[in-house]
Image 1 (cartoon, chains in turn purple, cyan, yellow, blue):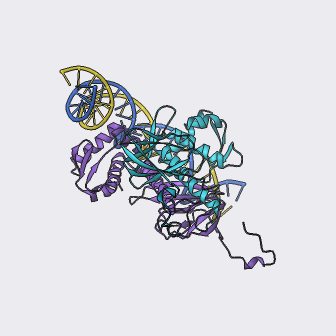
Image 2: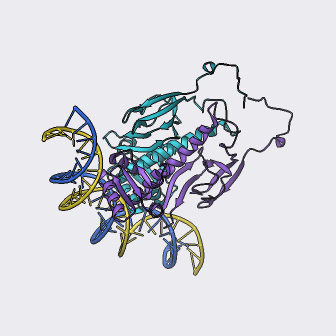
Image 3: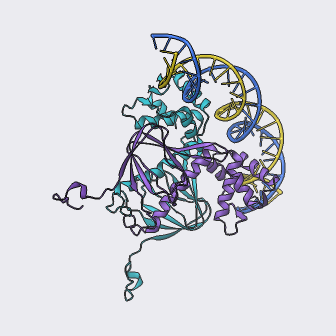
Length: 209
Length: 209
DNA sequence: CGAGGTGTTGATTCCCTTCAATTACCGTGG
DNA sequence: CCACGGTAATTGAAGGGAATCAACACCTCG
């Protein structure tokens, strides 16, 4: 806590944020734009949404007065923000917290990236659960597994079908059927029930939307 | 960056983490437990899961080597963590980052709480989308709205039915039908299409699981 | 070899979507 | 003030995708 400097005029203190007003339906920032700010809602309501290539829309969150949004673990926004009704917002410059030297309350700096990574993971998960079909979920899941796997095309599933079902919001039967369908479609091949080859990773990626 | 002290014996440097091994299916921590650590996966696979009162299970994420998990915006874990297969983990003490004096790369400290709040929001959202019926989603949504509303029992919906549908992973028709059902059940009452009274908040909360 | 958990497959049911039509709402302009 | 147009919301009927119920195959381990 630094003591105030009473003799310095107010307009000499640096501005730390900018207030802006938005009308209903106005875009605040777009998906893919440089994530230069995070934003505090003073008044109104904001929605964070992303759109699929085929037009499906998904709203990840509503932000109302007091909420701060716009945190990203990457350089660009992964969803758009739009004013639901007339809204007043404060924009704070977002210095890249991961690149920044400062840690998080004594915690190793690298941890900070993990926190933001958790947000991205949870958001992506919600989007998958909210707006995707069973086969899209399975495709996305296999792509995720592939990214973790040493050999991109050979995936070992350490978890049971029930685990997969509970992760994707499905039943074991549906998981099994969708995997069977992917096999019949020539996308994957079973080495065993728990180990499979991804024969067409690009197609899987496309099928996961 | 502090230079190493070459003459000091290694066992005099303070331990900053503890390595522990877990066997398949072993619990790492339980939902509701004090969130005293966050955890780095060195080897193996971990699932983060929560269970509903009626037995439904939801897995929020799988964590594999290199992932750090266990971040909470509250004092307790909001989900359990379990080893999927034999796993090696590092436990770091988790000082409460919100209470801590240090900020986040020059960013106001309060922002930090928001980041963690976003995680909690996204996790809760995923859980809702993954394992709840349409009427449960609507109930949960109304409870959320109520928490934001000045007058807890009078909620003004600034957003359209389409917005609600895209948030809950439903269609406008289903949203409309579920709201109608809640009205017929005496849970809510319409002042107008965009404004409604919550007649039985406790029942709504219960219906949202 | 048998027991039990795990995974697959089939038949049926049901919840939600889709398609379609009607009604309510709200701002505009006559 | 009210007719008008367009969007938003509700309601109904039909269809589909995933759940449920049920049976069977597979693998592991005692």
